[in-house]
Length: 251
Image (tube, rainbow, N blue to C red; front, top):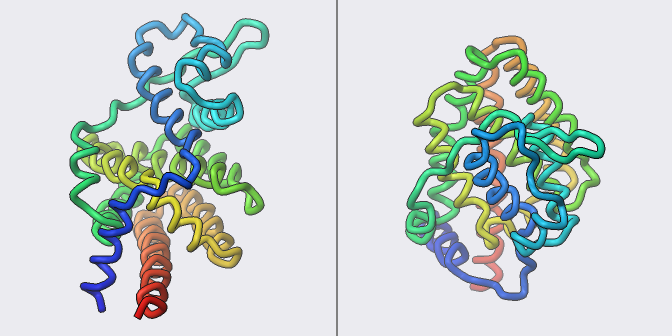
């Protein structure tokens, strides 16, 4: 059965469903991170207007504003009334070769990797996070609303986990995290997260985000690692359950 599940994950990972809406906000968030990285040497120069950015990236103003909201919460940008949007600290550049790796892996493997890198990152974050990073983690955990739509949940969840990865203070770990995070933005991957996101699982997940933020704030590395492992394992189990049910239905 485990081999069937892994194979099913591989098939789904490589299917391209043209009926699914494009993950506009997630895509534009990644593009904005690149833009901020390129323009970080000119923090006093405002970013293009929302209208110009929406046209440049070919996305809706709604998707753009959601991405900008995440970046503002992260402290990457700030806004001055009547003057524009300005760059904060430089964003990290994503690791290369993501497209090639994405085509060679599957959901099951990605979850295995997450279980290996994110609990240690949470432990490191508990030991190394700055006061600003702790405050940001708390803001990100509080910003995720249980009644938010799937697009919004995706943005805030990714930002929360990225903040922990950055707070870990290990450049190589962060590069590995960014590769995995880029792969998990695949539309099929997102589809299964939506299927797994029952009200009960969502409540549990958001509670774990708050618990993680507090464990890191208390410098409790053991608790942070344990909660993160439980958090990732719960997602892995949810995916396995869904795939198992699909295989049973198909047989």
